[in-house]
Length: 370
Image (cartoon, rainbow, N blue to C red; front, top):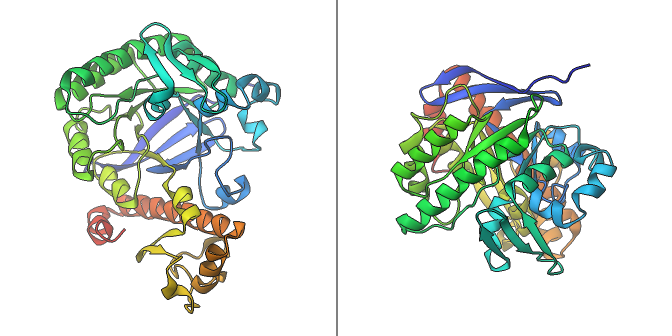
């Protein structure tokens, strides 16, 4: 039986904001969508069953980290990443390009060979070319693959950003060729160009010539202000293909997501819900809460009365404060799950308001609150 082909359709728009449906053979993804991050084949402090119960329809995993350990061959022998981690949801894998930037002290860039890494674990040398990145992602059997790119740090150096963008375009062509014919999977291009409008538009234009199943905006969430990020999205929002999903990589806070949806973005990922959960920061409809604060020691009210999924409100602020202040593992588990659930409730509310034509009012109510 042939696998279902990857497809995307937009069925409702409210100005630039839009609701759509990504179809994969593993399941459908309603957009705008947030992808919890499962860097090392696990969403930290959460089980896959609980992730599903939050309404998450897709997760992200990390090519670089899985390449380092346990290695793609071990995952292939286990039947692929979905089997390995017992995850029936669609999985998007990044290409390793972000680690070219975030672990820049451990690598160097070669136009032909790609990124040459020294493992942050044991110093072992790895070569991550566009072809190797795609080979690994296909070996993991992910459903949405990303081209190999170079993600530069924020800089005002136009020539440096242009050089990086040109390299990413060269690697995009090689990634597309290596991907071959896989209609039941998707390959996304990544738009680069820093904060320079002309470079962003050139990158997008050249990627559209190559042709991809979706278009990601990379090189943001790397130190720029929220205003600069929104300005960059404003520069390209009218030029992005309407019939392809749009993915803003590594973003972000609830207000980041609201502002990006307003500018036509369909997909998001970020480690923030789980990373914040492990440090005691909760996202709620009333705003952010640092549950370790002493003022919650005698507060027996639930963390967020408006979030009632998974019975998470059985646990009071008082109890959660105690768990964090005694370094109990359950603290990280409960708050990480709460935060992912909040993000998915946010995405559901965003979609509902776009469908009703009331997204602008919803945006105005929460943009400064969340």
